[in-house]
Amino acid sequence: MAGPRRTRRRLVLIAVLVLVSVTLITFDARSGTSHITSGLKSIAHDVFSPLISGVNDMLRPIGDFFAGAVHYGSLQSENQHLQAVIGHLRLEVNQTSALREKVRELTELANVPYLGTLKTVTAPMVNYNLSNFDADITIGKGSSSGIANGEPVVGAGGLVGVVVATSSTTATVQLITDGRSSIGVSFGPKNQTYGVAVGEGPGAGLSVLYVSALAHLHVGEMMYTNGLAGGTLPPDIPVGRVRSMHANVATGFMDVTLSPAADLSQLAYVDVVEAEPPL
Image 1 (cartoon, one colour):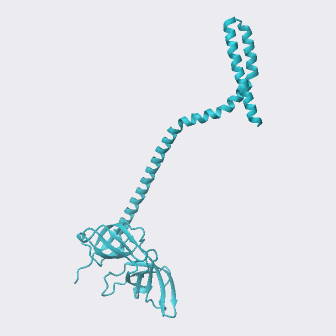
Image 2 (image 1 turned 135 degrees about the vertical axis):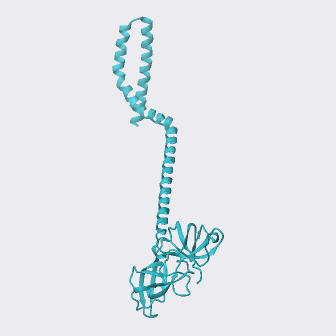
Image 3 (image 1 turned 90 degrees about the vertical axis):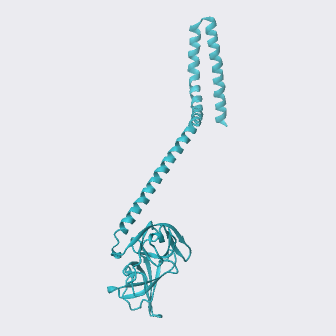
């Protein structure tokens, strides 16, 4: 309570000071006794100056607040402009990163060693079509570009999938992780050990069936398309690396899982390998 009372007393004294000052000015003007009024004004200044300073200190923050309120609108507008500029710069950075990634993929596709002299059609990835078990993508070229069902599709790291449907301008590619996918694979010395890699769904990798429990296999080993007669895929395309393995004594086979050799989550462009004409 002492604070508010002290403030009220100061305000009353200021009011008195104002009244006295006006009176002195009026008296000075009418009487011409400037030496008297100047002395009284000096005394009044000495008495009330500390009080005026204290009141000013109390009122200055309030004045600053209202001054800030006057400029708040312009500051808010400037802040919005700066936020827009920052957003634009971030967009440019993202677009530059995406373009750099596309250039990298195209460069790697142009130098894929495992395709040899096989003819390919490079196509952009248009859309992912993923569910719990199915996994396929749509690419931006189709039958008008010479793409046909059954043709293998590769990315920078290895096999991506197989074309399962086409239109004139697009094609659907079943990824190797699709639950319906089945790829004949080989590994080991001269790739003379065989198995079948089946998809386990998006993000789940692949399982390899029919690998003998006695097979020489190690984690990190690459498996390739086997290219056996009757198959639709050319040989020696990387399919995936061994992620885990375990000999199943009960079945006489090995439980093997693969991680896809190609990064299926980052596909900007792919190569469709054109089918070779029959001899």
